[in-house]
Length: 207
Image: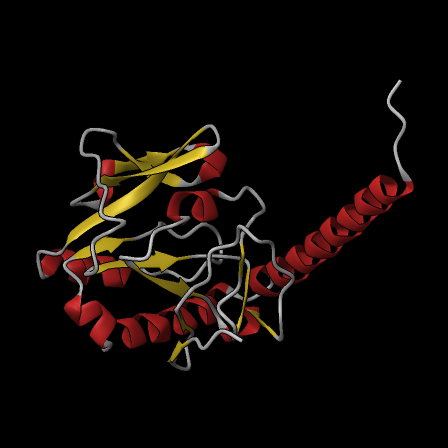
């Protein structure tokens, strides 16, 4: 029989408490986002898109990793349409078990409902632009902070996919009401160098 040391039990307790805290934060910020009236979400999303489209990040990007909004997530479809108009190559994520991969898309009709009810692409054009400097990654999430930390739905898809990648530019996309003072973090969390809200695009200075 394996006997757990006191330090082992303490570590398990600490991890459980930390997970409970993170779950509570997720619930809080998901509720904040989800209770917005659709009209307010649409107005704020339009301002977020304006900030992205006017940025040098978008202007200099040749490749775009996008996402399809679910519920009250910031709607970045106008950015995607403009990317297509400018002939920027654009891809959306698709989930395979614990893994996420991107596939190139040239029209919204190439998306269909997939995992977790998210619109996902067909699998005929794999896109691997993670290490390309002029790739802009529009990154959704539940909560963010000014230090570049992001909290997703807890599945870890973005952290695993972009772990160790420092070529592409990751831009967190959210409403101001999703901004926390400081989020709890894990060693494997991927920091975001930029965050955009309806107010502005901010370059993150980690500290």
